[in-house]
Length: 197
Picture 1 (tube, rainbow, N blue to C red):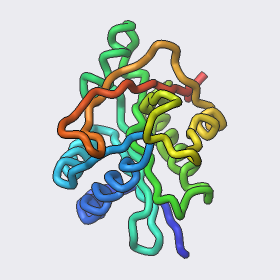
Picture 2 (picture 1 turned 90 degrees about the horizontal axis):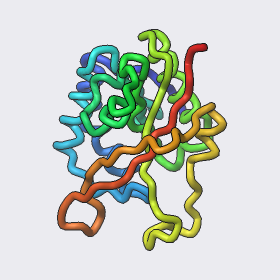
Picture 3 (picture 1 turned 90 degrees about the vertical axis):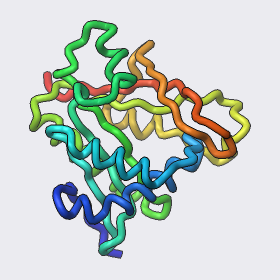
């Protein structure tokens, strides 16, 4: 196994857009997201995200096979659903960098790739002058009928990286769940970390 992690830009990004789209669908299909994804939508989403000024999409490869990906961009370029809770508090969006997905095939977890994803995104955020990194994660009830008995939340991993949930800072994002006929809104909790004193 030869693993490498690198920022994807230009032709390299275009070459792997479909692989990245399929990876997002595969990983987010599992609990807690239960996402019933669409490759065409994912390709458009990734291309638009990568097109934001100062955005970065990072890929993890086993030889030439995409096995993981992470994204980040200035918060001010994100969709209104993401920016609205910050704006409602009067917070300056220019201070924040938004971390999108961090997805990795299960076989490759526990080998430091997730840590590297956070390090590289934080490097990008600092290089762009951001003071705070933030991301959001779906909130599910503890007794959710599709929660696997072996499910382990990522909260301890995020806490170890220095992130913490921001009290009452939530948004709603919509997607179609497995078995559903249409999209529905899900609550998302924001986590944040100060990058600069």
